[in-house]
Amino acid sequence: MKNLSGLSLLVLAFTVSQVYGYITRKYPCRRSVDGGWSDFEDVRWFGGCSVTCGAGMENGLSTRKCNNPTPQHGGKQCVGSSNRTESRPCRLQECPSDGGWSEYGNFNEWSACSVTCGKGTKSHQRARSCTKPEPQFGGKDCKGSEVDIQTESCDMLDCPDTLADGGWSEYGSFNEWSACSVTCGNGTKSHQRTRSCTKPEPQFGGKDCKGSEVDIQTESCDMLDCPADGGWSEYGNFNEWSACSVTCGNGTKSHQRTRSCTKPEPQFGGKDCKGSEVDIQTESCDMLDCPADGGWSEYGSFNEWSACSVTCGNGTKSHQRTRSCTKPEPQFGGKDCEGSEVDIQTESCDMLDCPADGGWSEYGSFNEWSACSVTCGNGTKSHQRTRSCTKPEPQFAGKDCEGSEVDIQTESCDMLDCPGILICVI
Image 1 (tube, rainbow, N blue to C red):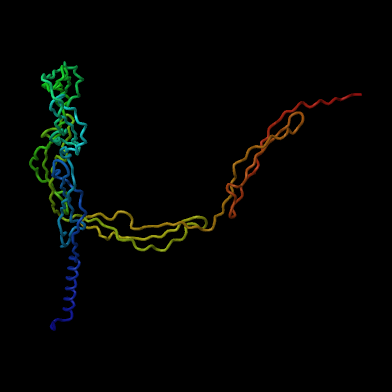
Image 2 (tube, rainbow, N blue to C red; image 1 turned 30 degrees about the vertical axis):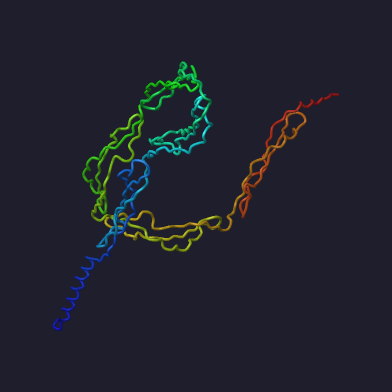
């Protein structure tokens, strides 16, 4: 360095400064931007309800993107998962509920003794109902009998030597047919007739009549076809993955498979299958950096108020504040901020009252016509109406109303002919 002349040092310093300036201008430093998550998108529900009846759960998936902001210039990717699994309650149909017995009621009175002589039996009974709960949604009826019968022995007078067995009377007429046992599909209907063990009645230990006192006849009845609800088929194969949902940044791609409501198809008013016929699976896909639109900074402070827009009466004054499209600045072909960078606020301002000229009110009604101007021959009559300078009154040195406040109308009037003049010549 000691051997370099002054001119050489000057040339070297100029060359280094030119090269260093070129480097700094060509390759400016850029600050890295870490990625931030967007809000989760709407949940996409899949898989159907976890149970076929009663309360179950249905699973769903929602996704978010690492674009709020997108990581840039070596910034860190978002931490955590882009997917979130959620669940919600579901109920396809009610589960079958089997019936249950109520408590027994009280026993009724004891029956008469089964014989009129000798040793017999008497009974009384109590009942219960299949109502706690009633069977619902295809549940089973209660098992057992709804009637509880208790029997005791009863001793009557000794029977005579000859016994009299009972005999059946003739059957009565059949009653009306019952309603069909079902409201749809194939059922049965019935009607019945009765007879009594009275020809003769059993006496002195004689036997009761054998068989039933009720004769029931049954027929089939066909109603409308019952509704058949639809059922889902198995899913088919997934189709090819779709293209990425975005051309830049973080997006999603999906493929899907379908099923049909054909096992069985709904018939005769039956319900369609619940849920979706399409099962969609989604994955994330990362593309090139997306254009970043510009965002407004916060507004600065308002400047001083302007002078009032008028010198008298009611006017306006204003002041304003500004903002800039720098949070962030538009990048990668992103759009400039929309709207104005200037926010103007306006207020009213009251100065001295301005002169207000007067204005005429509406005319009032005409008064009565005046008497005719003559007592005979042709004359005139008139009537008039008035107005006032009060709408508005002149104020603050304003001008009075122009014109007259009285409006006079005139008409001709004809009276009796005037008497002639008699000229006497002597």
